[in-house]
Image (cartoon, rainbow, N blue to C red):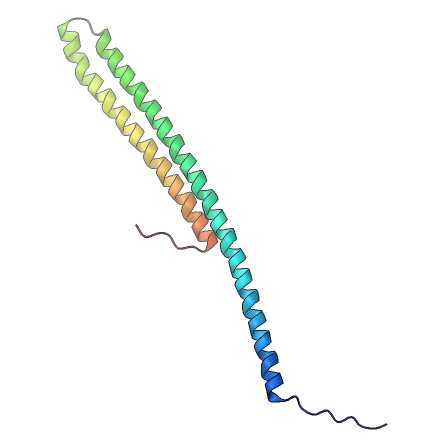
Length: 133
């Protein structure tokens, strides 16, 4: 048997192979990052849609509570017969309106907090920073 003498690879071929390998790794990393970014953006977009629905539901519920409270206040003053009864009913009706306003504001505040928390959690999972306020 004769010995085969293998010459070392020329340096330019070795560096070209290394360059191709690096380019392929960078392309793969970029493709993976792009897919992760797309999935994260989709997750955040879905959370923002759900948050908008939560806020809308909160607004609707708050409007209903406020409407009911104001109707009760109006009914109280309408049922008051005589000047003394009307005089006594007005502060009570005003208090009912204030309570309805406070409940409505609380409902809206809670809905906004839940919606914000939902979006913040989605951003955290997606690795996106929270927007500056």
